Length: 337
Image (cartoon, rainbow, N blue to C red; front, side):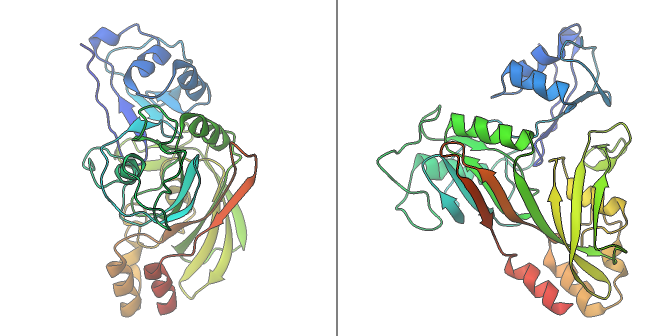
């Protein structure tokens, strides 16, 4: 039997370790057998694009595996999958019979994984797809076209991209397979505009800038990411929206969707995200103002919000653009500054 170690986190990053029975197997064939919902052809493209690393290096789809190697996979977009439906309220910004745009709250994991088997966005969407309630804002519409024409008939969820657990804001979900595939292609071809707003420590010298630094998994802390010369390409653009005495509010646009990209990139230029204990190396504790320090501590999340999302509707060809104001807890922190 194949021995596989899978590290499945909220960020859609997977780690595999081939067993003795997998030695000599092609990389693309191995991954096709391990990852549900992904065709071998799509995985070959993923490997060719450098989104799959074997022992930290990019290889070809035909690469022959060895026992005990580490295969690090960044799925970029999530495959459609079946999840256990759970009755969890959703804030629906837009929906039609093909897709829905959702305002995800901080604290909600997007995709079930180790330690997060229930209570996720995927579970909530599965419930609304399988048991459509009366129409209205925050609920999926029940129409003559129900249920959506996707495999499984009701609970196959097409989450196209991810937001970290403590990141709030806009995320798009496909209701059927063709829409999911088309949206995934737009994300991969960098045709989707994703703009975030974040509060960072310090004050950048310039009013705008670009961070073009490759990223990889931290070799010492496997749940973290880091800037690394041999990592996957990652591109982040930022612009100052408002300056405070010790902090700066930034608009951030990402052209790639790497795990923890914004948080890692901003920390790499010494302007880490406020409230991000994973990457700001204790900067929150260095704040001199006691009231502001307490406000950050009680925030219980980091200051990162997916404010704007733009893409082309896969069925109608219509340009779609959505905006979502920062949630109240972030607005209150800004007032305290």
